[in-house]
Image 1 (tube, one colour):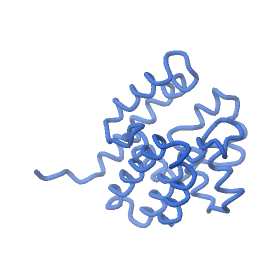
Image 2 (image 1 turned 135 degrees about the vertical axis):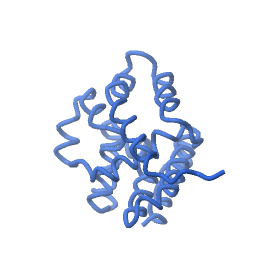
Image 3 (image 1 turned 45 degrees about the vertical axis):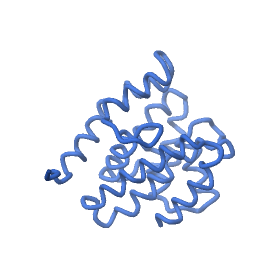
Length: 182
């Protein structure tokens, strides 16, 4: 599944959105690093990491809300499995931004949230990867998003509202990782 997901993401993002493609590669690398704690869900997590931002691709934009556009594309065009579509639709507390955009009913009606462990792991991967694919702390990632969109922007408002959940998920996953021996 991960080979299909990485090739799908590459074909959709690499040329029109090279920086988004770099971010996606970094998120997928983070997902691979979680394999020891994800067990049988490791491949599904990595597939979701590869595909989480495909809705940004100009060819896929319908609503302008990338989690919904990406999940719909996966479901309607590619026939992806339900849980993968749900993870993409709800990645990084997307329901909060969907509320800001007036799309919460559509998002929740079409895609129930994914399993908690996978949802938190995908948050960890996304929220510890910068726009250029580099790994960083969740606090730096949240600050970067705020700086990129600016005060008052709906994305900034949504990230601010989601911050407690995002921080909690990242810290929960980080707490499950083995301590590195130096």
